[in-house]
Amino acid sequence: MSLFRHDLASLPAYVPGKPGSDSSIIKLSSNEMPYGPLPGVQAAIAQGVGSLHSYPDMFASGLAARIAARHRIDPAGVVVSNGSVAMIEKILDAACEPGSEVMLPWRSFEAYPIAIAIAGATAITVPLTAEGDHDLAGMLSAVTDRTAVVMVCSPNNPTGNALTHSDLERFLHTVRDDVIVVLDEAYIDFVDMADPVRSVELLAKHPNLIILRTFSKAYSLAGLRVGYALAHPASAATLRAVATPFGVNSLAQAAAHAALESETEIAARCRVVMGERTRVAAALTESGFAVPSSQANFVWLPVTDKDGFVADAARAGITVRAFPGGVRVSIGSREANDRILAAAGAYASRMF
Ligand code: PMP
Picture: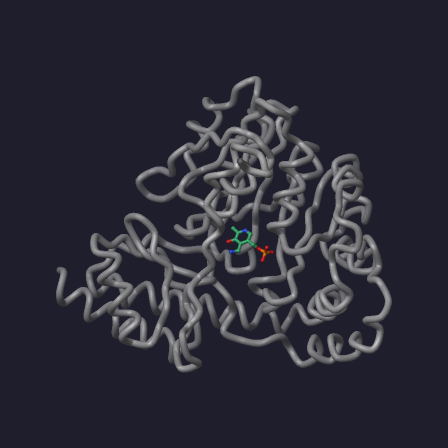
């Protein structure tokens, strides 16, 4: 007998990127930044410690106002959450009824199917194209009258492909306006392409769009768990109503606020990561890997022997993330990247 819903009995738990078994192992399996939080952010966290006897600002209203100013939108359209994963769960829980369908590209972020199952909805997966892009036409034709939410992940985890503004605009124009489109932009800060998505502009025209951002990647705050949604004020009001009370802790709020005051340094760090991404991708291509062009802080390597690649990486002191058909390697420090390139070279000389 299960005390919980029967449909959750076989739900596989989210598998996190493997941490190293000792501190000499470098983790390139969770798309984290190779840098700690900036000094000003660390100071804000230290200063906040003295107030931990008090509950945090329930709706993170100071941080929400700062985020709204950054994106030049009404603060009523900003909802802060305990990481963007928590926001994905809340959106799906609030939007889905028994029988609802949630569409997702696949392969994409592993947390989506779990959140869809928890919401009691049916996942409708639309495979990525052979190049690793969203099949937007296929997604449009898979919409039914039961579709409650469509997930869009750009840049996509784990392939790194990003949508263009014109493609997403056409999609939003065509999809029924009673379907929520969640645009997960966790890796937006690493985008460097022609016609990048200008999501906030799209929000003004499409009230069914919800944009998700996180402080876990470019802002180096994965450990504090803070993300946010930008949405039409009516959607945002619902997301505030279903929020976990005091779900975003006060240190996370203070740190995220301080990080937004250091955008220049953060952008400079992102440019270093993007430069390393170019170097790593070029070296991997040179070794014979078919590396799709990545717009995120990781690269996708299609490999036939993923266990062999993981073992080569482990011998070089690196953990990477294996999936069916390939491995995802986060861009780390120059030293970590050199190590993974040496491991990939060993794999290539054995396999190609
Ligand atoms: N969206 C995507 C596409 C991700 O890859 C990740 C983290 N791996 C997240 C969201 C989660 O972000 P957060 O840490 O804000 O929950």
